[in-house]
Image (tube, rainbow, N blue to C red):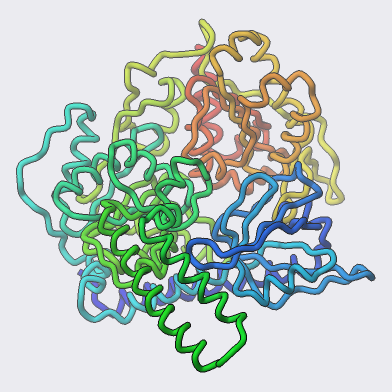
Length: 633
């Protein structure tokens, strides 16, 4: 067991790395704000300008919100999401920008329309009086404050459950385990059944390691369902809103009452029904609360005795607070699962609440500091994810080199392997695609379920193909050669390879012609086109929109980065690897976890588009190319 001082030093180092990341992101934001004009921000999806203002009103949480709509560049993919901070600005007659001295928060986004929560009525007045108003994303300082606060609490904990969990995870304190007989789950495979039982037996920490396609969500939902037979309520968190929505939806399908704290990104009617806001509005006492709040607002605008008015407002506020408390207690008492993001667990609605078990999905993508935000509210934790796939996003090179992307899940997997359950049967990929990542990342422990092992789209088809994208290179000033270029992405410059982009779409077009238009549309054969580089993604989307051949198939084709495809799957995946240069520089492609994600998205067909002269200087890509060649033998 490690001594206390070394544990504190490790956590202090993590806090210092987080401070470097915060400083780097703040400097980058200021650079973009000061040096980048509005047209470029609009083009990169960071800004909407000019805006059309809609209604402003108080929502059920008594937040003043305003509806806004973008009127230009509506074909640009924007980066506005619920929960993100924004700042409004006004353009005067001379073209000068004046930023308004308040920050707001995105409450809802759908297409070109957005609802933004404002800090007060003065902010609404300022926006409505502006001539030409715009809105842009702002630095998310709130999340950093929560992470710093969580680390400080962990560092200073001397007793209690938080200190115990810290010592179990970092100091090597022994794990405790219950000893009751295992429960049978005939509808699960043996590794899934074992994982659920390990979760039920764990009294401190458990990890469900779910490689691609192994049914991690199915296993986690079953573990939550069984835990609820033993506990009244659990907290379920994930790094992203999308992951929270997904698992909440699966739990709802099982008949579990879910209270979703925060704003889901995928705003479907089903998900809205589970949100705190919609449940709050549907409560029988809500009409009475709304009437009291309306009376309070009316009293502020009335004339007469100030003292009498303030006394009446005070009495109404007291009644409103009492009603709100009663509604909150009713909603939480009715719910078996409270679901939110890791940062959402710091929501004021959860203040003072404690849970027997915390489940963290996507744990391998969450910074350790973010996990501690939620861990303060639980007695034990179950983490699910795959540390061999995408790590947390760390932008500062120094923080990345220092290990800020090392997650709580990695720490536990390495220090407490006895609490890790590996899911070993995958249901996504044909065996030809699965075997390479199985050897490279999972020590050959995975097997393909018979239902997917030998399936393919075409008879006598090969599941993986490497298409050589090497082309005549462009000489550089130093005498070396490259076919890649710099291109614009949403958050700066990125790599792009125009020749390879053309080849990527031509490869897919040739394959579509082999399958046949009618069969693709009838069977809804879906496709993912992936690139590690945002600029290449932008170019591929542009080329696809411009070519009339793709018009009937556009609903079946998704083009995105590797990060954007995490957790998704498609019948066909086409991977454009972009890098092509004399020096053999690979950039993002050196992160093999990213390649693991890209390769394992395909169900039946995977095209690898890349320059072997550049890529195969790395041993991983040499092995990959040799593996693809062997499939033809």
